[in-house]
Amino acid sequence: MSGQVQGVGYRAACCGKARELGLAGWVRNLADGRVEVQAEGNALQLGELRLWCERGPATAQVSGVAVSQLGSSGEDWFEIRR
Image (tube, rainbow, N blue to C red):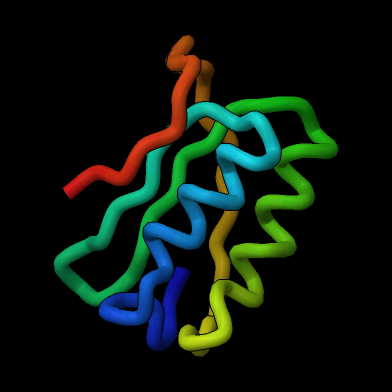
């Protein structure tokens, strides 16, 4: 995600939403000010998370979301990475 997405609680809120949806994966800040999310789950769950990511928490101002498909990592939890 790009925009005002760091320092606004985006990672914690994203982690909470992903866990609520039953997804596995992680969220982390990038050095260039963006936030990166890798999530695994069914298409409906992932679609709901993507819609959430496009809005983010009320304190964020999301200007863009880039989506790519990766192979499964086999994780069964969702965490915040540093």
